[in-house]
Image (cartoon, rainbow, N blue to C red; front, top):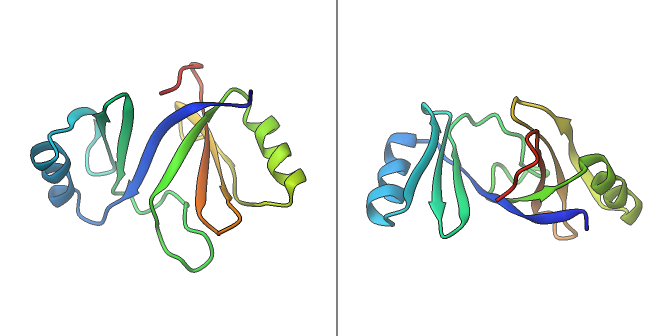
Length: 125
């Protein structure tokens, strides 16, 4: 099976100083990894909620601007992308490797972004 599970739910944020207290204090999610104002993760019952303050992760589709997206874990990013292309769906962002992972962004039939994510260490979730 090419999709293993959900790696994280992605939320672009414009103000990390405002967003972090909401997820940490109001929703009482457990803080996880953080990289300054660029990326902050929270644990939400076995699923990671990731806040991206960089405004650089290209998950926008068309002129929709930055939107929330799910990151689906896959064992082999290229295999999943091949299936996506064969289906006629659009690849919005070709594979990118920012460090500890590789990802691409595709659009579902409604134009919603879906992040296809492969961690370099083989883990997921």
